[in-house]
Image (tube, rainbow, N blue to C red; front, top):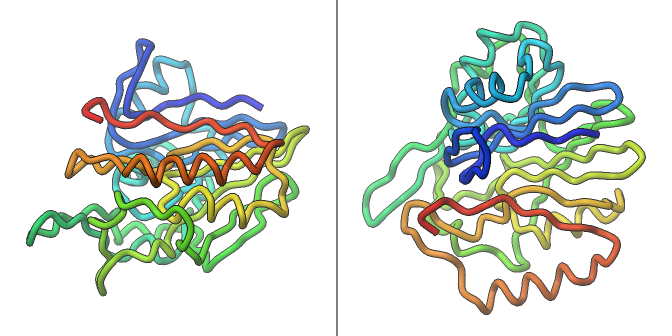
Length: 241
């Protein structure tokens, strides 16, 4: 399995950095994009890494925020056959709220009717190699960085978020932001027995520039130490963190 970061908040290479996420993943049977980032960064960095996005066969959009699915329209212009898996709630309105102002942070709802888009309602097994699962509870080690995020009817419940399991020689769990909390996600993923967990833990709010408390961070680390057979790799916070 090969995993290449094409959109990330920081860079230590010739690739451009951008707030958001996109991972290019090659397995035995698939060429996958997990998230797309927000703009042209995906496409510019793919050229730098000699990756042909027109040959991607599977796209997973982890949730309905523009920094993870904002480049969907352009991707559809360069790839006419990839299946794009997304929870149906991802195309609903989503906002970030600061004081009394709500800023739209969702993805283009007009794209949900595209023939390549497959709208899901909960867990879904794509094939023997790829499975998607959602998490309904957010009770353990919930990040306060989520407090500014809203749906159309109040605080975001993140029903639009999904996580990817890749089963090859090893089992890999890929998260986007991990809005429902990495501890809750790992509890749901226990049945897959992941060897690796890769993704964002959403411990920093890019709008307020605040990080979660040390108490919450220490509690989360303690909980994750129970998973002695899993290696954790978290994405970088934004440069201002």
